[in-house]
Image (cartoon, rainbow, N blue to C red; front, side):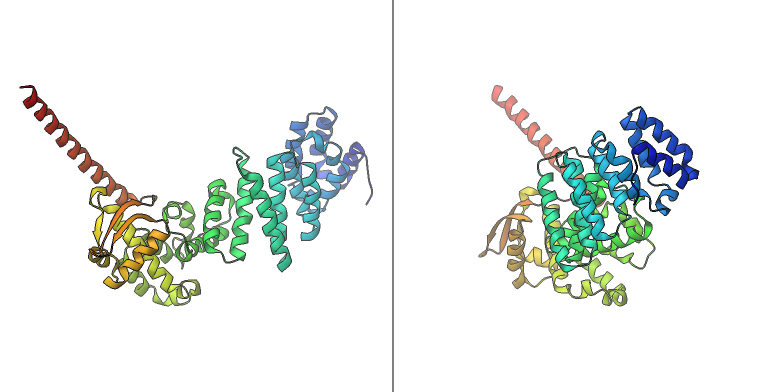
Length: 385
């Protein structure tokens, strides 16, 4: 590969890519005037042109031109440019190239974490088992760098959570996949994800929510526009499933199981975890019962819980112990009287019906407060008299 000085290379590039001659001339002028911010923007524009990509010229562009002044660029911008360059290499070369860049930008949190996320992604994409462990180590390092840091560029967070999502998917870790995928979506504009990828991600999120060991909150996902990707598809039933679980509606759950029996039977993630799913919706039914019960009346009998959860009376204590151990409720069990005194229920994102229920309870509480105030006022008058 021939080497050039920066300006010589630009002249060479004009000959290689005559269609970009005007753009290259503008880059040359900006470089000579040392207008680094403007030059960054111009480079970001030219490196995505089909002509430069088709000629596989990006690495030459970096080596003969960008490297001359890379320390003048904003570190995060340099990394983004270099990632575009790295995509023209194979997986191993790409990771090694970005590893080199990472050492140059190590003092900048955003830039360094972005390089780590990219290298972790390359390890994951290699398909080699040993590299999966390297992916984990690199993600852990990136996570350490993120600790206690706020206000980084959105691309830093979205890149980290995207590769974390893919890693946990590869490891079949449903709960971690669910958490990281939702974080990824919170930092990523949905329109930047293809429709096909949206549908795949939405499907996997639904399955992860249902089978995840410690996933008992579905409000974040139900409210997320990613679910629109399933509307009208063969997996549309999953949306109704989530909503049934969200409110612990066992009757609706059984109805959906019957209605979609054929397609559900082909979903091994569901069929292999049916016992866990039934336990989960029973717990969610308990949470819904506790939520709808006024806080001053949360001494709930085992019989009432059995009626709500459709479980035999003999299984209620185990259900309560499980819910307490998961930290979903707090309280104490009176085994003799077969009553649980619930003092706290885990917060959840509410749907409209649940919000309406809470509004009614606030209205009841307000009326009680007014009644108490009137009693106090009347008693005070009697005392003064």
